[in-house]
Amino acid sequence: MRSARHAAWRFVLQRASAAVLALCVVLHLATIIYAVRHALTAQAIVAHMHASLFWPAFYALFVVAVAVHAPLGLRAVADEWLALRGRAVDAVLALVALVLLVGGLYAVALLAG
Amino acid sequence: MNVPPTLAPAVSTRAVRHNDLRARGHAGFLAFVAHRVSGIVLALFLPVHFFALSQALSDPLALDGFLEWTRRPAVKFAETMLVAALAVHLAGGVRLLFVEFVGWRAEWQKTAIALVAAAALACALLFALNA
Amino acid sequence: MVTRTPGPPEDRLLPQTPVRERRVGDATFPVRIWRGTASGRFQQFDVPRRASQTVLDVVTHVQRHLDPTLAYRYACRVGMCGSCAMTVNGKARWTCRTHVDAVATGAMLEIAPLSHLPIVRDLVVDMAPFFDKWAAAKGQFKPTATRHDDFARVMPGSPARRAIDATLECIGCGVCYAACDVVGWKPDYLGPAALNRAWTLVNDVRDGEGAARLRAVAAEGGCHSCHTHQSCTRSCPKHLSPTASIAGLKRRVAQALVKGKL
Image (cartoon, rainbow over all chains, first blue to last red; front, top):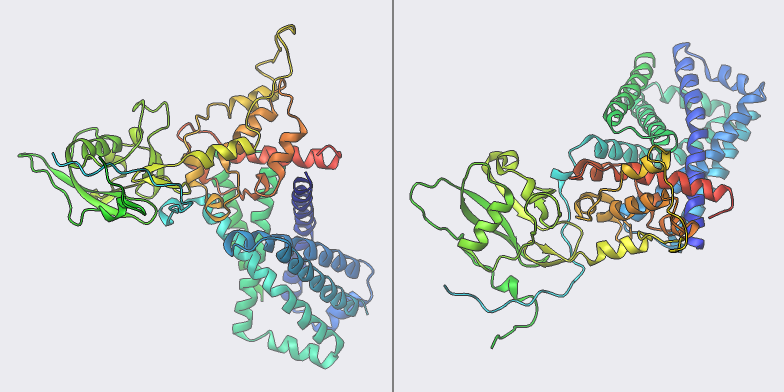
């Protein structure tokens, strides 16, 4: 049944992106707390990012994982709390995913210089 | 005894009764609400975050002005709440991944939820006290 | 001859005043009982308080001595059949196994029919949707052996059989279904009992349904709609854990999906 495969893929993607995000968020939180503790200036942070290959790649992966994870989470909220379901809702959420992806990757591109 | 006329059973009308808060005062439900609400907050915040970052990064003056703005107490408080939301959602999510993929022990669930809350609180405090 | 009025007649016949029966020397306490259909309301009765009284005792007293038109279900009255499940002070329970002393906080008892199922009348719900979902989850055993085959050998200590042990005792009482928040929010959600039974059968090495059952439980409204609230696990009178069963189904479905066997 197509419905079963689609639902199962949504579940797998949601959990896989969650696992990726778990690692990304831990690193992101650690970075934030480190930056705040050491009172890093904007220039210092940006310079660090510009000079690195790792950080832009890391944040690009972060953005992709978010663009997969957030819309799938919102799908459940819309279905259960707003009683909004069906193809129209899925289309809107695909749009949300696109907005997050494009917006996020644009910011990462600026970060990478 | 006066017996009223026989009452025919109503046809199933699909109208049902729903539970109220009395059925929901337990750890598993509260953990779910925390996870869902924090997820919604984060989902609403992220586009704003990406937009603000793009604006600040494309203009060096804007970046400093932006960081200056983030030093305001109200903004610091909002940031702390966001960090808390992130920590709650992350820790709760890790618990769910454990339940779904590693295994289930009924006797561990309440402890796991307590650990999640503790970890999230620790994270939020680490941020708030250092910021 | 009986005259029937159109619409839900029960609602219009709801009495306006509390019904009392005075017996010298009896302490009574107020009990609110749901009357009518989904558009009905609570009616208050004053019921004598007795030692070791169960909620089923209360309902039975009302029907026998105060209002014979009260509709309710029970059968064994000893906690084996699950027929007497109702909502007591907001929580789904077996009324024959619920002592009034344990739940009448502030000496108030409120009895309503199970949530999330169509109300036939008063405390009686239509269990058909519950069992329809059981069938939709393919909650029935599909035999593969014939009379000419030898008995199946299932080791009691095997992981699959131990998984079955943990889930097998479900008697279909509907308490978990009534307690589940997602059932309330998403009408097509199969619910904890149906999925629990599907998990039991998925682990049965003799069963021949295979991937068809996995597809049935993975479809929209299936196992992926569970958010691990554990309301079901908390309220199951047989101490089963549909939450654990559904987590098992999610794992099994994901495995089948990535192997191309869904």
